[in-house]
View (cartoon, helix red, strand yellow):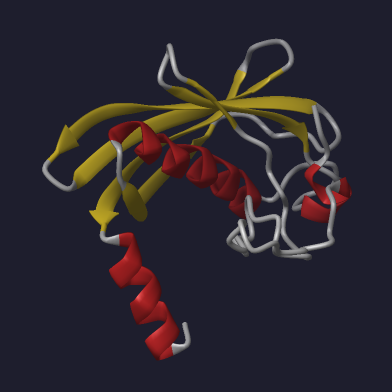
Amino acid sequence: MSDPSSASQSGEVTAAKILNSCFGCGEGNPHGMHLPFTRDEALRKVIGAFRLSERYQGAPGIAHGGIVALVLDEALSKVSKFCGVSAVTAELNVEYLRPVHLGEEIRVEASNERIDGKHLYHSGEIRDSMGRVLARAKGRFVAINRERFLQSTKETGK
């Protein structure tokens, strides 16, 4: 279990490591969440367990809905690795069922539902320590050529 707001903020890059500056999971982003995820190869699921700090508050004591969406998007996006591709989010539909309380343990799980050409359909849930579903999401991801994508972002500066 970890608190994403207390993760290392050094952002050091070695020759063997590419800097990941993603706000959700990137170690290279000093202001990011540094969300830790693991992959369960047998179940083909991405799993994360952590507590969100007050930094991510919306209503008093509750995680901001945008942060809840970000947590789900991060987990869902990592499922694409099981499909052997890099992919970007094309659509994300979040259903908010119960408040995600700050400082309390949450667990997020995500998996693939189907593949249709370059379109990957993933789903996931956030649960509390009692196993209650707090939020769930379905997303459509589009497989990309990672090298071409990175080159285009360098060229446009975005």
